[in-house]
Image (cartoon, rainbow, N blue to C red; front, top):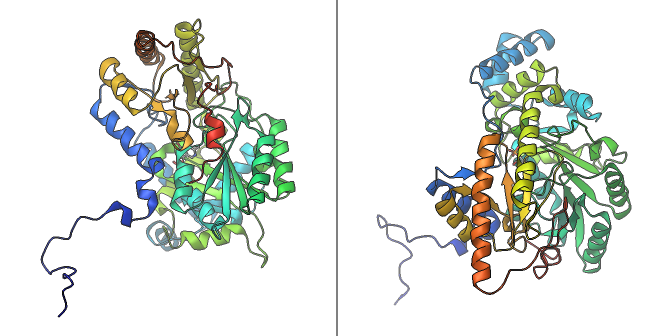
Length: 473
Ligand SMILES: Cc1ncc(COP(=O)(O)O)c(C=O)c1O
């Protein structure tokens, strides 16, 4: 007689699912980190937040959306001579997988970045995030494939790699961004272990989270290394337009003579994040004469089919309204971020300038700075910070995949104004004073961080970079 229990009975509630039966990424700290942080932020809605990496909001105007849509419609009518039926189809129907604003993006890249690309090499995606997932998916042929990234790295990239089972290996970063010598060392070590390093992820300007910017000479070296070591460079540059000095450095793609660079773009920080429009330039030739962009489009056709037609049209109109120049389009935002960066750096100097146990990075633009403190800056400290002092920030260990940055916190200042920045820094200074007093009372002054102004400082005894250099997803 069969004694096996029945697997299920019709009409009975399904037993709860076990997370361990799902893809490991659902349980990965990299992917759950944002939920945890949002949960803490949600419980302290009145706390002043240096946590959200959102763009400045005061310039948003709902009226601009129909205006941009109409501008794009006019473009279809007058520049592309489309009939009303064709225009309706473009806006209402399923669309071309590679998108329909690729020609405007190519124009913008030419104008702002001196990047000359065939519009066919531009794949319009649902945010830069989708572009990263597609590229990483394509680069994982088998278990020997790995990618590299300067650590600390953008959580969106670490999470995307996790989603497609592609291990990420850390490369050292200093005040000038990724260390090219360490990249070569890591690539060779990985090869010696039988692994295949495919690409290295780089945010060249005002990186999230460190704020570091690569000098031009390092950019050129990275391209040489990519050639010599047979690597692709994954260039992600959403903050490029927000330099405090107004100077622009050449993108890796504009210096790329051998098509080593996949250039990722996002309209989240320039136009608006809710559009969820991004893109990747993938002009690498395939052996059968097509482009890598076409291969990525095949993957996209099974993920989102096409990027929202309405969103593309709105972003298309935004580009057209500014003559396809994001430098021109972002003048007001640039001024706000410059003002806020100055307020944060001056404010940190005023409050911690005489304290050798607290250091911070000094970015030349963007939205982030990283503070190193003599105590553990984890979720528990964050919750205490919110409850007792009314200030939120982001623990840095998330950007190291949980294996470093334990005494560091990221301050994001994009949505604030100088008054709120001053209030927030006062609250932060009170937290630091309290934590230091606690350490003193416990008999240890805490470890003393190395003071390297402008660099991502390291705390003796943590060995974050060494540890994370071995990080695999
Ligand atoms: C480094 C980096 N890349 C990309 C993005 C934006 O991506 P998306 O276009 O998907 O919003 C962000 C946003 O925070 C970022 O920090």
